[in-house]
Image (cartoon, rainbow, N blue to C red; front, side):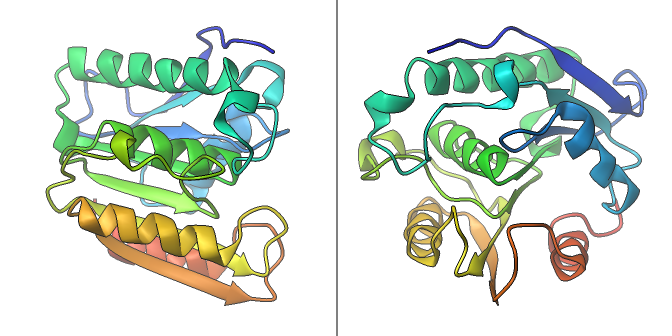
Length: 209
C-alpha cells in the first residue's frame, strides 16, 4: 500500500490573476499532464489549473467498488492530497463557489468522493465516468449540503469499470445533498471521454466562463 506525495502540475492562468480555479484528477495509469490536456476542449482557459499526480499513477489500488479497507491507506491519502490542493487555492483568495473539479474514471470517482465528503457550494463538478467510492456507500460520509452546485456525471452502458447502477446510486445521494445533477449514460460507448460529453460539460457546468 502507498500514500501520495504532494506533486502538483500547474497550468492555465496564474492563480494571482485568476478569479476561478479547477482541480483536475487523472485516471488510473494516466498522469496529471494527461488530464490537463482537456483544457484544449473544455472552457477552462481563464482558470488556474491544479492537477495533482498520483503515486504509481493510481489513486488507490483496487476497484472503486471494492471493500473500503482494501483501498486504504491510499484512498485516505488521496482525499487528503485533494484537500491540501483546495486549501492552497482558498489561501490564494479564490473561494469555494469559484473552485471547480474535473476527473476521469478513477479520478472522477475521487472527485465525487472528495466533494461529497466536503460538500458546499462549489463552482461545478465534472465526473467523466465515475461514481461514489465503496462496496457499500456509507451514507454517514455524505451529510453536508452542496447548495445547488452543478454536477455532471457520465458512464457507458455497459462500462467495464463504472456500472450504471452505481452512477444512479451516486446521483440519488448528490441530489439529496442539494446538488444540481446532469447525467448522461451512453449505450455501447468505450471507456473514454466522448465529444458529446465535452459539449454537455461546456454547456452545463462551464458555460461562458
